[in-house]
Image (tube, rainbow, N blue to C red; front, side):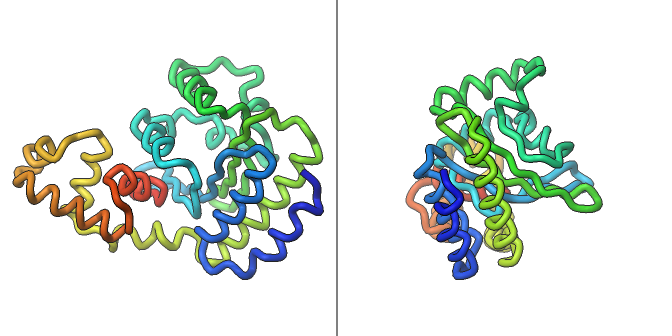
Length: 238
């Protein structure tokens, strides 16, 4: 990866009109250099705990679902270390000298099974504890200093463009997009429940459950409930 490779993307960023367009362009750029997926967003403390919201997330739908269902988000080293690091770092660096918990070992084995060897995390800190983070997952160790510096620079420009666009525009629309009952149904879909199970839990008919789920799929312009859940997870809504 050379500095010159990144310039066309950086120059084109102002033309993109949404965070999702920015994310797609960024993911396409890093994919040519052995990076499998990317994510970029912000975290802040809330009364309910620390929350994460994505500007974009290019993980495949089944990765997102497994990450959420296995509760890996609470055990992921990258966001943990990013909260206290002002420097760009890699996953392999974060693991050095650490004794992983059982859940962290499970996460590490799972990502290895997906072909993920390393990841680079570029944190952005703000007063009050707010944190921005751009992460790219690699199929190789990120040990080339020049590659690392280029990724840091491109991640910075990408993150800044997302903030200029209002950041998590689609995620901020999600609560208004779904009705309360639609949201209730989708939360149980995420937990692997069938329409019959959800109907029993919510004390409604299974046909009503199907109606709500079909409406969500139509609103999100997806074909399956798996895709719908993945979209809502990626937007930080589930």
